[in-house]
Amino acid sequence: IHQVGGGVVGVFRNGGSKSVLFRADMDALPVTEATGLDYASVEPGKMHACGHDAHVASGLGAAALFAKNRDKWSGTYLALFQPGEETGLGAQAMVDGGLVDALGADKPQVCLAQHVLTAPEAGHVATRTGAVLSAGDSIKITVFGIGSHGSMPNLGVDPIVLASAIVGRLQGIVARELAPGQFGVVTVGSIHAGTAPNIIPDRAELQVNVRAYDNAVRDKILKAIDRIVRAECQASGSPKDPTFETLAKFPLTVNDDATNTAVTQALQTALGAEYVHELAPVPASEDFSLIPDALGVPY
Picture 1 (cartoon, rainbow, N blue to C red):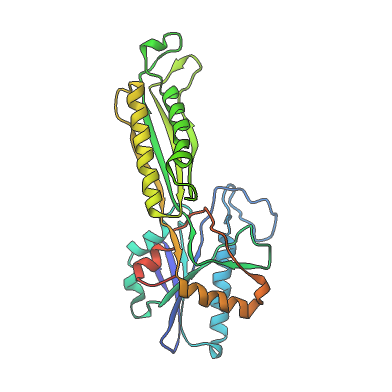
Picture 2 (cartoon, helix red, strand yellow):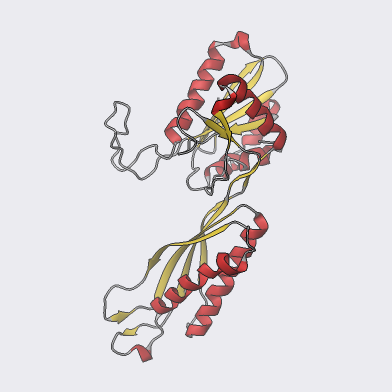
């Protein structure tokens, strides 16, 4: 067993030359569990939601089956349990913690992972080749004004009006700057400014989320956000430049063609073709691909 970067890797060697890694993410989320089941979280405001409970159970279950049935397979099975998928930091933490060196000669030829989703229906699985999970960026933007009394707006620069103009203008990126058919999402999920109805504050904070299925589109959106925010600040007479802080950054997940074909065929054989479907692109983001990328293997 290797403990690396907050995660754990169990190594099951059983002869043979092939090695496969299966990753399960084990985050807790800020949610109070309401199931009342005997295995429910006992920590108020924390539970393994968003599929992480199922992912870990699947990883542990697979490891137990491999351990108990060594006469049915050969090779090396790597059961990797990764923290911090929700923050986009966990996979990189394991890489930075020495994962590649820790695996050494057990380095896999391929990496696998899974997610439970709302579709297709229960009892069915779905796979997809190529881009499957979007790249994602979360950014905190702070814009600056000049504080004043609400009765004397002419003496200040209102950052709330400035932030509102930015929110409206950002929606034009996908609507007017991306070509029809190109996928992109720009969401302003949080905006905070001021403390009283009659006081103009001196700053406003916006939290923006970006999704894309193409890194060139991603870069175009991020550059457009930077351009628009700076231009609106200038137009409003902001006293200083805005600041940009990256809160989370997720890579694009692009499934390898040959690997996806092999996995799909295996699922069809095990479950029946009627239970295996092609998955539509999912505009959610995930950091799993950082692990196979660091190992230099397909996933």
